[in-house]
Amino acid sequence: MATYIYEAYGKDGSIEQGEFEASKESEVVEHLLRRSLHPISVSPLREAFSSRFGSIVIGRLSTVDVLFLIRNLAATIKAGMSVVESLDVLINDTEKKGLKAVLQKAQSGIKSGLPLSRSFGSYKKSFPPAFIGMLKAGEISGQLDTTLERLSQYLARDYSLKSRIRSALIYPAVLLFASSGVVALLLIAVLPRLAKSFETNKVELPGITKFFIALSDALTYSYILDIAIVALLAWFFIYFRRTDMGRKLWFSALSKAPVAKDLVKKIAVVRFARTFGNLEDAGISAVEALHVSADSIGNDVYAVALNRSAKDLEQGISLSKALSAHPRLFPKVFVGLVAVGEKTGSLGKVLLSLAEFYEEEVNDKLKDLTSVLEPILLLAMGLVVGAIALSILLPIYKLVGNFG
Image 1 (cartoon, rainbow, N blue to C red):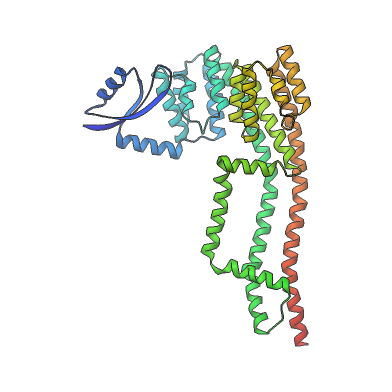
Image 2 (cartoon, rainbow, N blue to C red):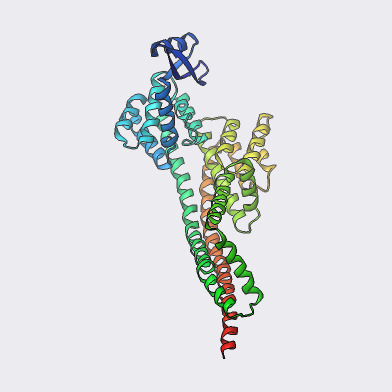
């Protein structure tokens, strides 16, 4: 007898994973079929562990990988291939292990009768909720190739927006890193040597020099402790920010920053308008589209507002009226045009047009943010370096005066 790990889906489409002891693989399959479960994969415990470990390492896909998948899948399906044949072409065409593993699992699921959206849905970190929602709508409507093309455009625009945000912040980040390096070098390498010289010559030190020497002593006390503190700060910023509390604190801080608060607001509006507009055009209900948009927007404040708006829609309230209950999040012009879209029956197109409009404003705000950050960082680091230089020069003048 051996232990097998299985993955199967039931009548309602839900995926079940578990273990079963059997002498051979066929017995596991028979056991699953008796329970009205359709097997997706069955493998011995050791192989399953290796497979799962591999999926942890290589299972996450980049946006570029997802774009490659969608564009090529749309092209092959439009050419007349079945989904299984299209996936087979992509599997043979790609050399990336992570992408190939995802495609192979999706193909296996489809052969077992699982929808494509459900197969990709098990990789939630790689495929956003809007992706799965639109794919599901495309399968139901029988317009999978058209939906995939729309998905490709949606992901490309979202990726372009993220790239512009990162590009705008690269120079300030490099400037901050370089300036911090200069300050650290002065405090760790330069100031300790001068402090010994001042102590040897019994120079009376001013308050500013004593402060920086104390700071230098703290930094040079233990480099291991310094590394631990830096690592802890990095963990706090990267991992803690992913938690619910971390995200709330992060967005709370950004929402109070002078230039950043407008930028954060417009980015959220762009992502909501584009996500909801594409879901609306794909035929998804407004309530479900709001829930998916809340999961996709990447902003907890807006997510709460959108989920509340979804409840309002369930009670018969229009989308524009539901959004108007959050005037600090959605501009009056935006809500007004949403109302026009509802009346004319072109809500999806109106929202996609609004996404284009507000994306231009995001570009302008990014330029403003960069132009504001650069002088502020230069001034702040200049003051710090100047203060350190002053703390060094004042005792030197006294030392020279003593020799004179």
